[in-house]
Image 1 (cartoon, rainbow, N blue to C red):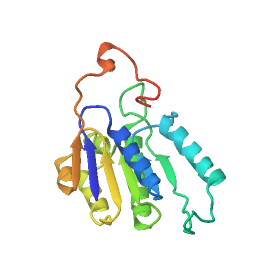
Image 2 (cartoon, one colour):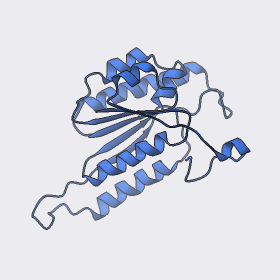
Image 3 (cartoon, rainbow, N blue to C red):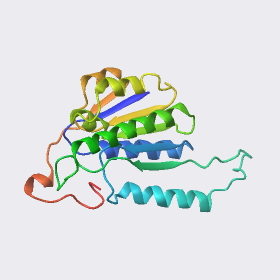
Amino acid sequence: MIIVFTGNGKGKTTASLGQMVRVLGRGKSALMIQFIKGPWRSGEDEFSERFALRAQTYADPNADQRGQKIPTPQFTVKKMGLGFVGILGDKLPREEHQKAAEKALEYFKEEAAGKKWYLIVLDEINVAVSLGLLKPEHVIDAIKDYPKERLLILSGRGAPEEFIDAADLATEMKEIKHPFNDGELAKYGVEF
């Protein structure tokens, strides 16, 4: 199943993370590949590290009350972007951002070919396409054979029509009110 989260409102990455939590709760694995976000620490990074540590430390590899083996779900956030393009002091050549996005798409193809991940989130891939870092047809080609029994999320503002057409479910987040418009900076635990 292909899901698209797009729109100018807050919540696309947050909705993707919520879907990941739901999948993890069902004992499945989830991978988020971040196409734009750079090396700074975010809440999802902290959660990923803590969840992995907790899963290693507390998972009972034996059995539940019914004698069923308990799988340890996996949760990984893979940052492959170099940061926001052309804003917030970005001095990197556009070509470097483009190479990073192309590398992230190749990584997705490798991971999608295996059976390790039940859910893969391509975080901010819509933005990578709208900025011209990736061609929409290359993304469509990469996702066209994604297994229907697994989940794939394409997130970010400005989803191209090709992505909406390819999706089984598409949601547009609409901004109604945001403190950023009143001059407030991004909030810890809300935006990152």
